[in-house]
Length: 483
Image (cartoon, rainbow, N blue to C red; front, side):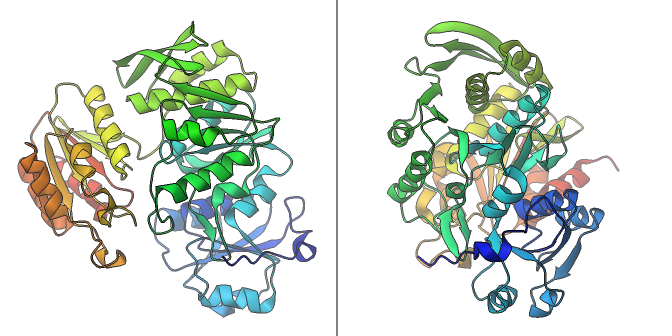
């Protein structure tokens, strides 16, 4: 493992207290663009480079007045920034990164920069886990805001209440989504190991990110390292229904509180009921009825996300009634079971689901949100993990919750090792053998044409991808809209 860190003597004065020129490599990434906004609000001169400069991040940065260079070239550094922040998409052979090292310019990774410029002396609240990080982080930030605590946050999705994925804030807490992906080419540790939370939430521990993790034990070691660094004066809220989470949480020096549906957790959700767009549920604490809550999010998984946040904020001393009153005003997160539109009785829904567990929970939530309606699922396996065969069999029960299933062949399949490549044709055949109706398509154009031939009034079309799916949703909506 190679680790190159800044000499602290070189950049000790580059902080949030005085303006500097800060240059971001990979600036159009979601996290890096958010950092650019934070730095701009603090009065810094911000520039950046990226080879994928397209909306929405390109227009977001343009509105902020941030100069973005197209591509990576050494001459972009001729103005000699005071500090560079290098995103984890940047490889060691990147010509601009090589120039930064040659010039000896101070440089940080994204999590290091967030610690310095966003967290500072405040207390970090970090949400970690294979699933549910974005929604749980967003709920945490919203309820802190509603309680008047003016939080800062940096989250991997657009929080609809703020129409942003970041907020500077001036209050005592900063909410961070704790990503287990690697930090930078010069620091291969998981990002969340660079955060130092006062309180952490652990939602789940499953295998993912096959491009950087060898196997499930490797993932477990990463999460164990994360909880092990919590201080004894801190707190960990962990999902108690999963044995693997309990085993990881047992390594924490901090006090651990478990939440879940089972009665052996200190915080338990009972009597879950779909209601309108969301869920009502009872919360039991230490075996005693605590209160009834409503969250305008569909699905069992979102009840658990909410329960984790209620437990965490209670640990921080927030008022139960205040939390109960603020929850119904949570507007959700973009691309998390987001209703894009309704066209002649056909509802189009966008979701970020890609891991089999998330796909299954999303379909279950859609059933509760749209009872009695035919559910069509369009799925794009495009992550570094889903391009491989690792979850080939797992996607069969995960997608079986839909009435009709349309699966695109993985884009850029060449990125997966030969002999370890996912097959959408095999998945569709397995689904059909299991009694479902499924098709596979070589590209999005063919999938869209077939989808339009199958869809009818009353249907719900759920599109699942962690990417743009070649513009499937806007193209579908345009085709369904009345001329």
